[in-house]
Image (cartoon, rainbow, N blue to C red; front, side):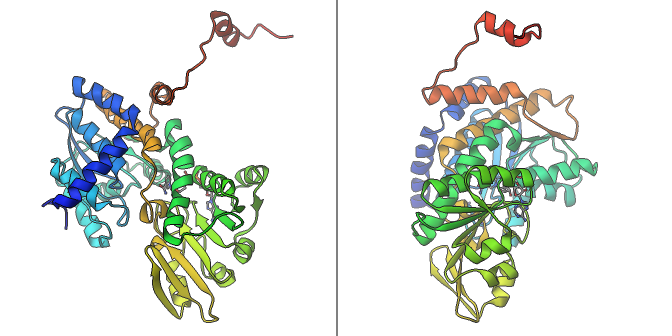
Length: 415
Ligand SMILES: NC(=O)c1ccc[n+]([C@@H]2O[C@H](COP(=O)([O-])OP(=O)(O)OC[C@H]3O[C@@H](n4cnc5c(N)ncnc54)[C@H](O)[C@@H]3O)[C@@H](O)[C@H]2O)c1
């Protein structure tokens, strides 16, 4: 099912919400203005597999302004905002996505986008890339963009195995992406998702954050800011020490399970909380996942352990264990910020999606010499995006004096 026939009321709501997001994306707006004048993507078809949100819609409109023909599907069955999909369809962008779609529909929607024969693909989690490599190996693609950590890990594994067929820009690896989107975007919006689903007070709660990468840092920092007592679990000693020096307690998963009240995974790994952890959690424990795939919480094990389950609030399901303890799962264990809230605020997606738009232009400009490997966006473009964002935020950069520039470039100085 898709939004072929746009629902008028839905599309109207989508239009307004997209306008609201676009207003808070000044960097992307500047790129859109230039794209309109220069048409760098004219003649190119783009297939995108991304969360169908107001910010993604703003990116799609930017690509169209640059001359591209665009088709979109969802990168997660629960992250589609149906009003946005309806608005996009009405604006002439084929969008194949419905919130809550089945796994079969999810993949048929990816295939529907690939049927448009895109020159470039925008992916978030590498699902479209995987379909292109497994099932549509004869389809030629000029290049791709990847939005998230988990997708980049998958692509690097493909490049390592020599199976990657075209160049891909790891947009996630740009500083203007992961240092802001993963930290501030996921940090704030994951808590937003839990708040909307459960309406709890974070102050005074013992909040367990599994994984202290960029997303985990953001979640832990924001939870601490709301007055939570944060406990971090990590497998990497450096990140674990970093959490400890930020004032968080660091524990093994099983010890944290015994004392935590809210649990949030952000590892990119599977079964971080599983049967042994659910068995140790106190009554009323809330568990949520911010990682890309819904594999971080072993919900099959939880279902096996439970004597009953019921939907107690929107996006909040209660599992009752044989001894009467209740475990509450937010948004089916899928990306909590997109499943139970609206995803990252536009202010931060501004930079991530500016990187995406510039990456597409960069692929077009460099197509003749790029190889089938994973590229980072050039540092100048990363810096350009940061400069534009700083300017939009009213900040000013200090400038080096010629004397300072010489000093920094020289090794012939000392005490
Ligand atoms: N929800 C969103 O909107 C959103 C946004 C950006 C990224 N993501 C996803 O979130 C996940 C994390 O992204 P990131 O950029 O923080 O990645 P990252 O690689 O920077 O951090 C992941 C951390 O988890 C740790 N880890 C791995 N297995 C663990 C385990 N079993 N127990 C405890 N810690 C473990 C790793 O050591 C690492 O420090 C990825 O799946 C990414 O794609 C989601």
